[in-house]
Image (tube, rainbow over the protein chains, first blue to last red):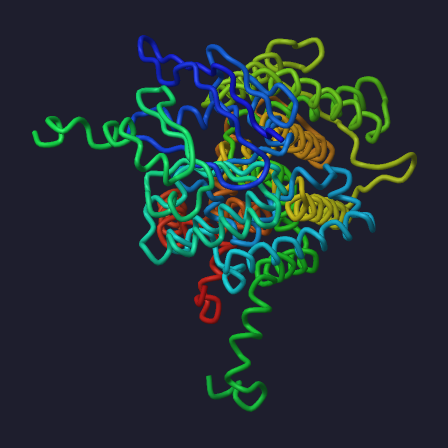
Length: 257
Length: 327
C-alpha cells in the first residue's frame, strides 16, 4: 500500500526551481531515503511534505487524504511527523518533558481539565509519563530523563528528538539528515534505532548525506539533483547508477579540475 | 556543618536540602506576610499592594514566562476591569462581585479583539498592538470624563464584599488578598503541569517543533493571552476595591514597568517568582527610605546586582545552593 504519494510537486523561489515536478511513492513499511548533493532540493521537499512550505503545484496525498498546503500541525494530526536538520528541542525542558510534549496529539484536555484535574486526566498523565519513560529507554536515554535537553550531547539530542517524534505514534516518520554531526559510533547506533523503529511498524522517510547510514539502513533510495528525481531503486542499484555518480562527483573532467 | 551532624547524617543532608529548597521562596513569602499580619499598620498597606501585583504578575508570567511571548499592554485589562468595578459599584450601586464579572467580561472581550488577529502573525506585532491598547485605554480613562471622572478619577469605591458582609479592616483585606494569591498561584501551577502548560512551554522553546508535533500554536498563544488578561482583570478589580479610589495613573505605563521589574527580579518562568518579585519590589523602597537622597541610587544598584548575580531571578537562588548543583 502506498502511504505517501507525491504527484508532480513543484516549488519555485523566484526564478529558482527548487523542487521540479517530483513524483514519489513511499510504500507502507520500511525505510526510504532521499539523497542528493547539496542544493538538490531535499530539504525543500521535506518542508513541502510536512507543511512548513506550500507547493506551487502538484499534489501530496498521505494515507489516502490530500494534505497539500495544510499547516504543519494539521499534517502532524494525520500521523506524519518530522524532525529537523538542526535539532529543535525544547532546550530548557528536561529530556522526559520533551517526550511528553510529543504525546500532545493523542491526549485530550485544556484549561478546565488542567485546573480540575479529574481522575481521567490523572490517569492520562500517568500513561504519558509511562510512555515517555518507555521511549527514552527505547533510544537508550533512560538515565537522562531528568537532565535538561541542552545538557545532552549532540548525538543524544538527535535520539531525544526521535523519541519525541515517536511519542506521537506516527504512521510516517520524516528524518531530516539524522546523522548530521554524529560520529561513526553514534551513526551506527542511529542506524540500529531506525531499523528498530521500522520493525515496530512505523514507516521512515529520511534525507541523508551520510552514505554509510543510507546503505546500511534504507530499503529504497530516491536521488535528487537540481530539484528533479534522477534515479530510484535499491541502495545497491542506485550506487552503481552512472547518473548518480555523475551528480555526486561531476563528470570525469569536472572532478579532476 | 558540624552542628547538623548529630541530627542528620551528612550524606543525607544534600537530599534533604534538595527536597526543601523549592519550598524556600514560599516559606519566606509566608513569613513576611505573617509578620505584617501581626505588626499591622503601614506594612499591611504595602503588602496588600504587593499581593495585588502578585496576581497581575502571575498572569504575566503565564504569557511571558511559560509561553515566551511579549506584552506591554496588560495594564489595559487591569484598567478595563478596574474602571468597570469602580463605575458599576460607586455610580450604579452594583454588588462588587457582579461588577467584577462584568469587568472581567469586558477585559476578555477586548483581549480577544486585540489578540485574535495579532497572535496569528509572526514577530512582534502583538507587542506593538498591546502597547497601543495600553495607551488607548489610558487615553479613554482620561478623556471620557462623564464616566471615568478624567484625571480626578473616582473615589468612594466600596470594599470587597457580598451582600451586607464587607471586608473592611486592613488585616481582613490582607488575608483576603493572600487567599486570592494562593488561588492565582495554585491555578498557574496546575496549568503549567498539564497538557495545556506543556504546549505553552513547547511554543516558548521552539514554535517550529511545537507545530511539527501537532500543537496549534496560534490557538495556544491566544488562550495564554486571554488567561493572563483574566489575571490582570482580577488584579485591576481588587485594586480599586482595596484602595477605594481609581485614576488613570493607577493603571498607566508605570504599572507595566513595575510588573516587568517584579517578574524579572522574582524569576520569570518560575512558579514562585511573581509572588517573590512583587513582595521584594514593594518592600525595597521602604527598606531604602532611611537613605533619603540616595534611595533611588540604592534601589537601582540593588536591581542591577540582582540581575547580574541571579539572572533567573530570586526564585532560582535556591537552586544555587549546594546539593542542587549536580544537574
